[in-house]
Amino acid sequence: MKKNLGSLPAVYPMPVLMIGTYDENGKTDVMNAAWGQICDYDKIFISLSEDHKTCANFLKTKAFTVALADADHLAEADWFGTVSGNDTEDKFERTGMHAEKSEFVNAPVIAEFPLTMECELVRVLETDGIYGAIGRIVNVKAEESILNAEGKVDIGKTNFAMFDQFSNAYYGTGEKLANAWDIGVSRFG
Amino acid sequence: MKKNLGSLPAVYPMPVLMIGTYDENGKTDVMNAAWGQICDYDKIFISLSEDHKTCANFLKTKAFTVALADADHLAEADWFGTVSGNDTEDKFERTGMHAEKSEFVNAPVIAEFPLTMECELVRVLETDGIYGAIGRIVNVKAEESILNAEGKVDIGKTNFAMFDQFSNAYYGTGEKLANAWDIGVSRFG
Image (cartoon, rainbow over all chains, first blue to last red):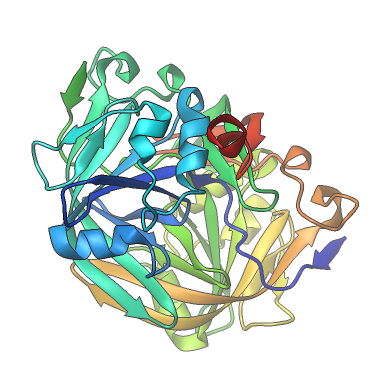
């Protein structure tokens, strides 16, 4: 039995993305965003409100980073989503986290998060009430501890968080269900 | 110790989205897409290759649906990602799944998936090598069995799958880690 729920942002799961930028004085800012996704093999699209300090920052620096938040730093990640970079608060002093400049783009890499995409701003998209940034992923920086023997990210070695917008909650990854492009052809040919 | 991995599509997790459309003869097609995300409270953005039958279809019908695949139908969902709608194969005959026309848009709702976003095509976006569709979510249709007492989707009652593009694998949801806009202020004020 199906029910009509009306119009809702019903994609699940959403990632917990940490968008890192520098302001006009070189001060590091970071915000929490769930509405971001890969849009090409080397590009990411993030949707956010234009009034975020992050937007003013990437328009100036033409760069941003996107880290994946993990369970070990979830309180920090969540708090970054509740404090505006337009205020005077120093988000790093308060949380004790650390950032250093990316080797590749003019944006900060936050040391404590295990994976970061370092992005050049390709385009700001304003259409149909949407404000978004398209970034070219120049490099992915990852902690050695989350890599397998082949040097690839192994989800079993991570504890990345995901976001549930139906109830505003964070979840972890559960069991591996299947390999892609495999379970289907095994069943249906 | 951080390693540079080069340019990678490193968002995690990705959803397992089933894009449903009608072709010019009213035949139902469905494809598997991971590169989709909410981009406004009532809009979704999906990135895909322009040569998909899905694109020809939504250009004609101005509509598509987006269902979330769950563990119970993962072989079907995976197989939908391996067979092109440009071929003659009937994806529904082979899998035994069923679709009926949405009450709201000119696109099919696949009965077996527990949640479907019914979308009007707002815009096709072609920029910087990206081909994407923006849809307005007119309605969300969900199985009563995944709703809580307030009629909202309860992730604890679902078994939605997610996609890991690092190893091309599907995972389930794990434990709830925290409430958002809560764990951060509890720790940092």
